[in-house]
Image (tube, rainbow over all chains, first blue to last red):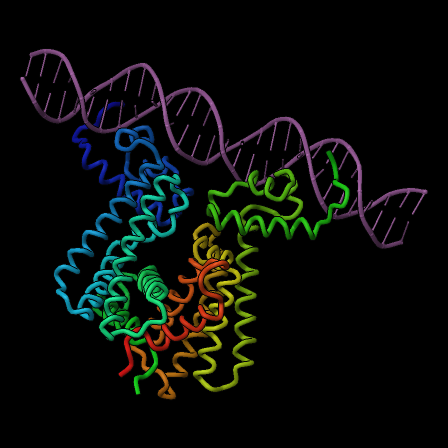
Length: 199
Length: 199
DNA sequence: CTGCTAAACGAACATATGTTCGTTTATCGA
DNA sequence: TCGATAAACGAACATATGTTCGTTTAGCAG
């Protein structure tokens, strides 16, 4: 066979990325094979290489796109949130939850397939993750400095919050009992106030 | 070659389990190959099969042992904690964190390699996980019923707490800044009271 | 129209990987 | 002491998998 009528590079590349997200999320990167990916896209395994250089670079590109978008969106949201510490913190939490609900596959992959990356690629993604964590740590320290927050340790608190806010999205189903807005509200309150009744 | 002087089935089986825990944790189940596992144990790939039936059953056995221990220990701890809701909840949290610090590899594997299990095996592990989650949900509802806790939703709160308490252990280093006791204390407080200053 | 490039294909290669087989020898109960 | 069993080995098998190659044809700029 040869080139297919109506074929379009951009469209195929996007289809590959979408299918790869789904398959890596379902099976894991190592367990996903390129024949299966090609079949999901509807092309032959060889044709994948018209749109990517290696399996490894496919994974890296997916992660890089995700981390870039996450950082950019976060900065935009914080800029729009003004200067009041509590508002900024709530803006961060709200955006984090919504983003993680919306792009749960990217998030899952970026969190759990780091070990599948070459060391150099992994270092780059880890660096971006640290940048993201630093945003929250700064917010917490800001809040502690103004007396708004009471932290045992800003870094530990940040990690715990991120673990909670991220982990919960893993179980999210779009057709579930709760909508995104309710999930944001519940988790904002959990993070800020815990579960103990205020007296 | 043939049987090695001093060889002992129990010892080799234990060494396989330990090495498998390490390798699966480092690389993921699909990315761990049996030649590497055998080399880590110091035997030939073929010899692995004197101690396990398939690669799949090795994974399942590791997960089953972990979930069984987790459930048994939890029940023991709760039995010892008496009847006071807050004490029981703190006992659960304390045990959860300590167990997850101590056996972080098992925990990580049980959480993230479910998809590598055969459907029947996965169903069994998922059932045990639900049992575990039910313990916490019960504790939260107990606490809410007595007015101790103020929950938006017991199930969501339970998932969020577990995500936080489990996720944080992923980053734990035995040689780190904080000891287990401090980590327990910080996270108990985070879960119960959040980060907002009490007024 | 025409030719260059993009985008697809089938086929094959080299290697990796789970597993089995036949064999060998240490261990241990009778 | 002796035989059954346990526990190891090297070698091989069948298959899976990432990737490359040469070829073919659609799309599009000139």
